[in-house]
Image (tube, rainbow, N blue to C red; front, side, top):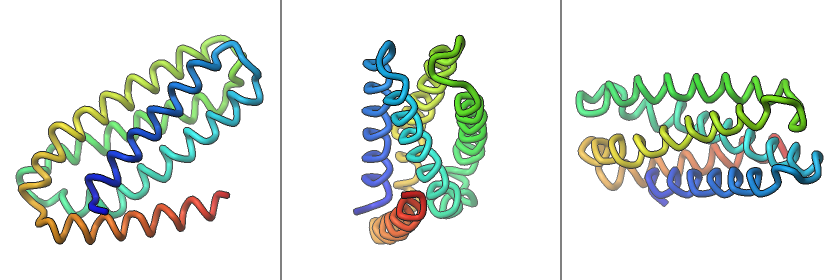
Length: 149
């Protein structure tokens, strides 16, 4: 699987977890905590493979340099929100607002990544390079996910 397809699958999975969290807004606290842990883990692993494999392959190219710098900044904002959410119980005041802000940030990042960065990255990477990056990213994802399981 190439890097683009792998990342888009991650984006869809995270969106589904956000949907489950929103549907469970008045539900069992333990379930929300479990869904949040799953969301955080997915976002952490996703950001890790982007920051250690995908972005470094693109950060020097003129076509993608600025987009990659912005993506790193967006990741930092998401990580800050995840830390705030992790420090707050799902039933506490403000948690739902933080979750909504996190979703907004993630959706903005996904939109820019899929519409702008991927378009430019396809000019920089050959299909073979995208395939090789995808394989490396998948291997690292599996390594990270099995380490946290």
